[in-house]
Image 1: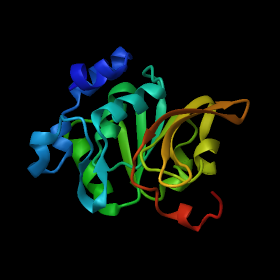
Image 2 (image 1 turned 180 degrees about the vertical axis):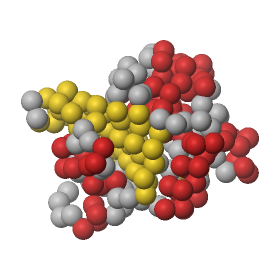
Image 3 (image 1 turned 120 degrees about the horizontal axis):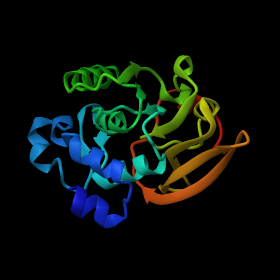
Length: 207
């Protein structure tokens, strides 16, 4: 998986490649799909959600440029796989999941696998995790119609945030947001397909 699907497609951060090799992806998918766990496509998990394909996990992780001392916020815990990858690379990971069953399952799975530096919270990711802010990096694993203000506010100056942003029609663009002098610097990365962000964002007017 690491050699043929990730490194071969341009992921060059050796720490990311090593982390992807260490995390047992098959333990984060339903038992009936474990024979497909290392293939290069997303897989369904509980509550109508998905686990992203390995290349996208690696690309998003490389994009926030972790060096080992960071506090990272993840929005959309899902099965906990992305949180585990981040846990291999950062000092501490705070992950917010809007589905209570998924949050409980992921927290238990991560604990059982020894990820003591990953904390999972059941809540609305649109609001971030103010009590634990500020964060060196933020990763959003669900598609948003706009950059959630709370997430940008909770990002440190100079920090990096990556998320799928919905555009016109059905297009989603994986986007890197860097905080420079308090303002967002936007870099589009790749067209993607993620499940939509739900919760408070549905009540917010705008694009």
